[in-house]
Length: 474
Image 1: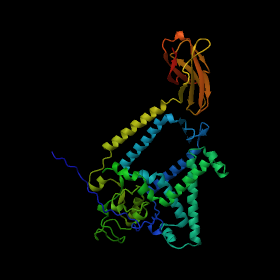
Image 2 (image 1 turned 90 degrees about the horizontal axis):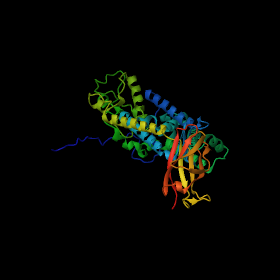
Image 3 (image 1 turned 30 degrees about the vertical axis):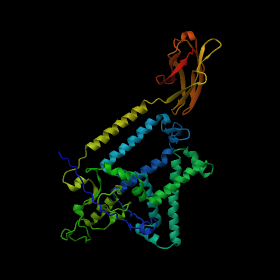
Image 4 (image 1 turned 135 degrees about the horizontal axis):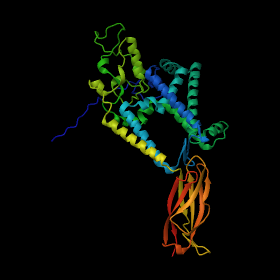
């Protein structure tokens, strides 16, 4: 029986609406994208989400919890404080689950609502719009900025450009210092930086991240989204006919063309699109959404707000450009909100969240490593007892000081030589040397297996047990 695979024809003549795309001089003002400002529902939403994201980024490292920095990734000491939890290299599974949950959450959102992460919450987009804001305040509107770049250097242009780049560098420096503050105590970092007392690595890191932020958000912008970001390449694998994306309703909009506000465009054989190109002028990646779905579209909704404003002025219905699906545009069938792909991502996400929760709540906030003397597995004491020497390396993985007791299981009639109660400060480890001596007549085997048990004195139910061996010799 012959099986046929349905093939979907995808147009290959889609044109990206950019100034002189055949030229490669990115720094020529005729080849840059001058994003026009626009107001509307989606831009208000984007701005508010951007403010929340920026405040979270800037303020989070300044918060304290249990008397220390709430979020601190101490790479030198290999411990990572996240509010009440301190993660160590031994807790790699928790980090792995967090990363997988983040990935599947992104897949779920993308399958349902397209590339909205890029348009509303991606750091590249957030910082790009912040830099564009500085451009508008220092150099004016999109047309004014374009004219300013095309004219020769003069005092006014020098002052405007200097103000803009000073603002860019200020934001870049603040971004870099805040980012480095996630990896070193931020309060001390800000003081040491300005009195020139910070270490070499801090200055070097801040310099690198300042240059990267300035270059990415100030100069590269859409280049990062179009050519470097891998998400734009594989996002289409998550799209289907029911994915909501920013789309142009060609049935309603074509044929496009200018007309008077009081003219009957239907009688002229025109669609609702007046071909004003505002949707192109407000796009941060410079595409024409009327050419169809393109991987460059970041779903920011700027073209929707621009088009809705024009439709209002023309007394036409809104949503010529809108968040809609391929199924809604091509057929009369309504989009299927619940479908196998979404259910699969949701189930996988819920399962991973449950596993992460179990992993966190069953996590024991201490670690034990047993080191024995490899040069001498056993020795005979002056009293005729067999003696084994051990070093217990106990790690307090919590953020508070702990009192621990040491117990032994599986041995009888033994002499314990060393401390059996210790106090360890938060986030520190303690090396405890000890010896165990046993009369050889009480040992049935050459090698006896037993357990070291570390008990939290404040919460006796919290116990950590680890196996070891006692060597009798011959």
